[in-house]
Image (cartoon, rainbow, N blue to C red; front, side, top):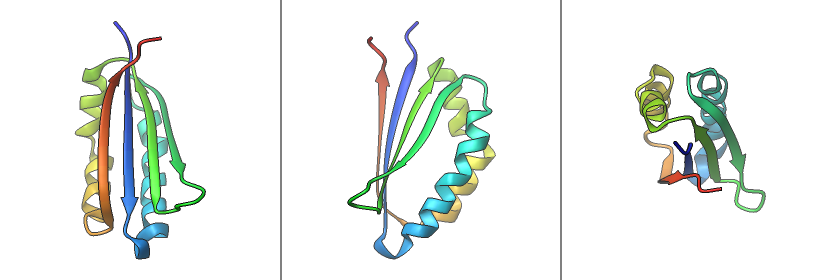
Length: 96
């Protein structure tokens, strides 16, 4: 079975950029330790610092769904509820 790739695009409100960066960074270490996580990389746009992107690879969709229910992700969502301007998530199948 092909691995699952997730691309999550997060745009912080202009006055919340540093706060969002710190909250997003908190997700990296615990997520990388999760079962099925192959890659979990956080990026920040060089020209538009309010734009963040997670590039993730998971062994299965089930592992990713388990990740989505983890306590550290729930804590992030609660903490950043009023700091996010836009969010998009792309669930993709790795082809080659």
